[in-house]
Image 1 (cartoon, rainbow, N blue to C red):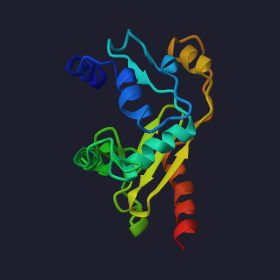
Image 2: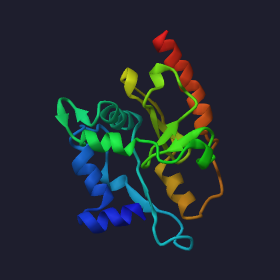
Image 3: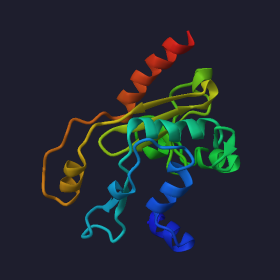
Amino acid sequence: MLGAVFEKLTGKTVFAALDAELAKPLQFQDFDLKRQRMMGFESQSRFLAYHLFLSGRDMARLGVLMARGGVWNGTQVVPAAWVKESTKERVTAANVGRGGLGYAYLWWIPEAYTSPAWAGAFLASGQFGQFVLVLPAIDTVIVHRRAVADEYAVARNLGKTKFEPTRVNAPDFLKVAEMVVNARTS
């Protein structure tokens, strides 16, 4: 529904805005506007999901932008106030019930990690266990991208396959990320 509201208010599609306002300024290397699509089950909701097909390095660019308060190569691409506002925890993990993660505006907040490196950390979580972990305190981004073919994602969302790839869940991803952060900061 959020995407529908965005499109109604701006007169732009989510994907066109992503292209113009993020992919181009951040110099995405693999972005293809034609690959982005809305999918879901119309029998469950008239508001389909906005599926983004991004490479790991383009996901990382989004993370770096956010880690640096909306600045990319010296240019303020996203207002710093919005970065701060959108990554501020709104619902605590105790009330979300998703493995120690609180919730902000489309970002998850890992509450269990309290070392200084994790101060202000936030996480984007996508389908099939794709993650962008942003650690602004140490200017670090950790990405996990599950290689899922476009054809599979489309078939799954059209109900044409029951196959489910092995997923990585957020708590397991964060445990591995913690090891990376500990190795980097020790």
